[in-house]
Amino acid sequence: MGAYFRFFERGIEKKLKNEASRGVAPEPVVPFGISRGADGTVTDRRQLVPPLGLREYWYPAMSARRVPKKRPLFWRMLGDEIAFFRGLNGEISAVSDVCPHRGASMSDGFCFYKGTISCPYHGATFDGDGDCKAFIPEGPDSKMVGNLPIKSYPTRVLRGYVFIWMGEGEAAPIEEDVPPEFFGEKAEETHLFHTYTYWNCTWLVAIENQNDSHNGFYAHRNSLMQLAAKRGRARTPLGPRSRLYKDCALIPMMKNQNYYVAPETGKEPYQLYYPGVDGHWPIGQWRRWLWKLCEPVSKYLVMNRWRKPYRSGAEEWADVTSSLWHLPSMVRVNFGFFAFTRVAVPVTENLCRVIYFHHRPKMKLAIGRLIQRLWFYGYFNYWLHYNFSGQDGTVAAPCRYWTSEILSSTDSHLVMLRKLVTERSRDAKRFQAQNADLAKANAIVGESEIRFFKHQETHNVATEVTLEDSEAIKESVVSRGILG
Ligand code: FES
Ligand SMILES: [Fe+2]
Image (cartoon, rainbow, N blue to C red; front, side):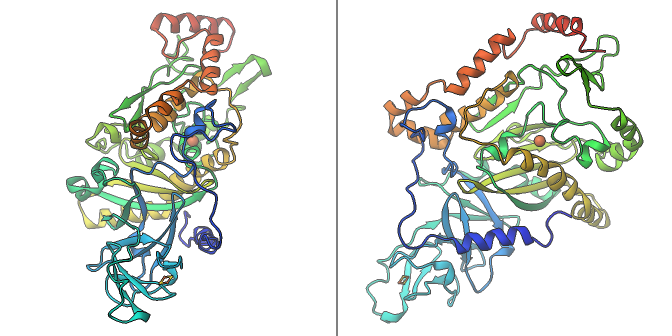
């Protein structure tokens, strides 16, 4: 059930620690905004996506409980090797794992004095601000004291979770990057349940699967969630389109969801006929009967239809039932009576830590709250974050992110997400301000986008169809016998 023993996660973390950099320098990282294409030109927008993530953001690191009292903790994120340790007042501090003296691993060191970390090699001892407070083998008169800064990272602990600023510049207000359930009133009225796992893929792949119109009732067809009730988008060959919100979120506009709705019933038929294979999807009818059987349990017990709809209070955090993307690497879904935030934290180029925050309104009575907790950790966590989301990990993670793509109109939102990352993120803005010419040269339509728009032409539809267009297409669908 979920990952209670964390054998898998701990195994990966041990491996990361064992593979920490040593000896000669690793490959240099290509800076943001520079194409990773073979000859440096941009033919595909993915060449501009930083494989180690956007840096000018707050990211969740780990539960504060993971940081030992008397020892540092090695943690890797965005390619950085970091040593976390307890600060003076129990807060969590973070410094580079690389000792500025001669490069030893700080996380192999000690926390001899409250709020400090000491290097295991010559005992350079730093506080949470990265100032050298002692250099033990040289005695109290060491000139290294005050003259040996180590890179330190701003951190905040919110509701028991450690957040870390990974940017070079001054930290942005944390409220811009962290969901509202971590602050004030929302924090008081909601539970915060969390868990995490690892996906073997680059970070953008780990969130691009969200909002795929075609993945809910296909890739997840045998998830416990889909077996109990049909969820997700309707089938449609028309692009879903998303709306950019304040350069931080992409909100899908739930259009074109009635493309295959049968005029007589006003509903999308359970099965559609696919002439190319002379067959129907889904194959067989058994899920329908299962849905009927599960309906009462699913509607009331699982989805809590009797409860008041959950509102996050902020449009960019899915105020009402919806599913959106939020920078730096988050999927945020409001299910109607609870919400969750899935964050894909880049660890290495091809590994990301997928952290799930589950936000659920607290019941009034203590016994009710206890039941909610047991229900979540006993079943719901598995149901949603492992069984359902894990299927995305299985199909999305092995994607070859370097091959050319032929996108369909239903991938229109994906093009927008990549544009948001490469053109409107804080990293992109910083790059544009510093490299005006390069930024202009890179703001071209990538190869995949050209293909995407060509594909639109062959469909003879605009991404956002008018009602009349929709009717015309519908007629052709009906006449080809796909419906009914
Ligand atoms: S390498 Fe850390 S104190 Fe010398
Ligand atoms: Fe999915």
